[in-house]
Image (tube, rainbow, N blue to C red):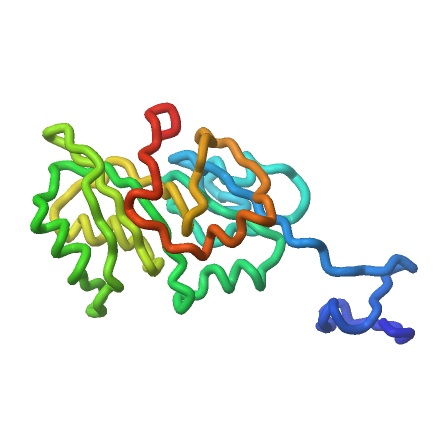
Length: 219
């Protein structure tokens, strides 16, 4: 490193600072890469699983190294980002950034309009008020109802816990967008690389009408 030999494998230093060579080859920071996956339901967000369950890494390319930006639980599906840039990922996950995430949720039985309004404006979890949410009905089939949630924060299983408190069963939960970046035409299990000009979409706040309902083949 800058002409000095380093023997400690855990030594830390900024890649933007000193010149670093390993066996004569200069090491530089990799360009950021971001991958968008339509995570299927039943797949877990983990590198490996001791129970032998399918993981998101079974669906991804073997290289380069990528880490998930946030999580989706096993029963949920939808948009999940991966990146080789942990600093960028942490900025996107920072609660103070209020990056909006949009979910389409199928529940049983339906909620009344007044309960939906109350959930959006005055929900409490673990004794703390949730940030205001945007919630609207997408469609109602009598016994079941599809709702759209736009959250400005990412508490653990937030939507499921709020609906459980209303004695509602969640049948499907799909993340359809982060900011104004949507799943598009990706089917469950499909992925694509994010273009650099799409990163700005992640920090934009969508309106409830910006995100279309997914067609049945993408659910």
